[in-house]
Each structure stands twice: as C-alpha cells, then as structure tokens.
Length: 303
Image (cartoon, rainbow, N blue to C red; front, top):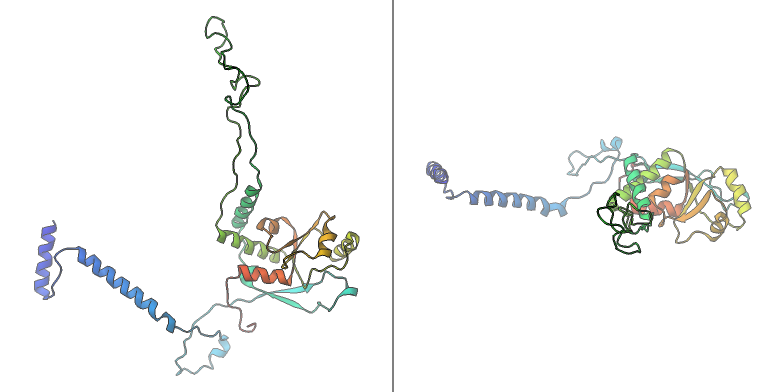
C-alpha cells in the first residue's frame, strides 16, 4: 500500500513540476512547521498592539473617521453602590456619613449566584474541622488469650475460636473506625469564586453593610448592645481589613452570643454563609477587591 502511494505521489510531482518528498513523514513535519510559524507570527507583534481607551458610545461618533485609531468594543458594567452606615452613635461621629456612598467592584459584589460553589466551599471547610481521632480495637488489639474456647466438635454447640472474636461480648470490633484525615482538597479558584458568590449573595439579600471604621470607643458590652439594637444589626459578623480587630469592638462583642468580629484575612466562605448579616469597613472592602477582583472595566462615567 505504501509503495502504491509513493508511486502516485511521484506521478503528481511529474505532472505539476514540483518535487515532492518520497514519504509521508515530511508532510506532517511541514504542516507542523507552518502552524508553528503562524503561531509565532501572531505572538511576536503583540507588543505593537495598543490598548484603546474606553470611550462612551455617544461620544464615539465624534471620532475622526480618517484617523487610524484602534477601536474595540469593550463590555462595561455598572459598579455596585451602597450607602455608608456608621457604627458610632450620632453624638460621637467625626463626620456625617448619611450622604456618602461606597462604590464597589461588580466583579466581586455582583457575581452570579452559584449554590453549588457555596456547597463545595462549605463542605470543604467542615471537612477540615473534623478531628478524625475515633478509634476502636480490632481482635488483634484486644487483651486476652488466643486459646480456643472449646473443642471444635463434640460439645453440640457452634464452633468458636478465641475470646477476641468480634461475635463475642468484649471482643474486637470487625470494621470499627480508625484515626484518619477527613480533609478534602478544593482548587484555589473555586474558593475565590466562593468568596465572590458569598459577598454577592449578601448584597442581593441586602444583608451587607459598609462602614467607614469599626473603631468602638468603649469596652462595655451594654453600650454596644444598645447601639446594635438601634441599628437592627443582631446576628452580625463584623469584618475589618486591618491586621487586628479594634480593641474596643473585640472586648465589647466578647460576651455577646449573636455578634462576632474577625479580620478579612481570616474570614472563610463558611462565615459568609453562616452569618445572616455582614458589616465591612472600607479597609475590608478594599482587601476583598484587591484579592478577588477580575479587573472588569467600569462604566466610563465612573472612571
């Protein structure tokens, strides 16, 4: 078969006047070389490609049609707007925050809700909390003699071995638990997506608050509890972007069952799902945008 194919190739080369190789291997090499050159040609001039500026559509008609300006259609999205709240009472505020609005990254706080991603992250976290120290003794570990209890035959009763048999009281456990590691693995990108989905779900449920700072002047639980009831922030997790939770807030929430404070670096996806309400300071919002943002271009009127 190969000789017939070679003969046909030779006849084609005589008719066309183009020398062709005598085997099939050079054809594969030539096609691979061509593909490799095309790929290289597509990569090499990448440094000459300029990123066009984002221009609103209503202003794009004013561009000079004769100018050689690269035009590219870029999908822009509107940011997430949230009104700033204040943990401090009105008498001790440094400045009014009633008219201030926080502009949040939509790639972090407006991600499509994925319940499957949240389920994977929650199960992954709960698996890591399992100790896995349960242990039982097998028949080889139970204390006792290995002597046969009674003869094999002659007693009229069932045959039986030593006293460590699993069918006897006080004997070993046949398939009991042994120490093991219950932790599971989850890709890092899935965990990051779980953070985006968790924060976006709180925004959609209107259970996410932004404050300028979480500094609390006092250390009395009673004063903070009165302020929390006034704001309606029971069952709330306070998240700060600082290295440590402010001392006043940490000491005040220590004796409150339905409140807790944590740093943004220590928060888990499980915490976002577990707590009904989240309150972030500006530093925590910046931390999540810095670590979770997908660099989605915003609308031109915000840039």
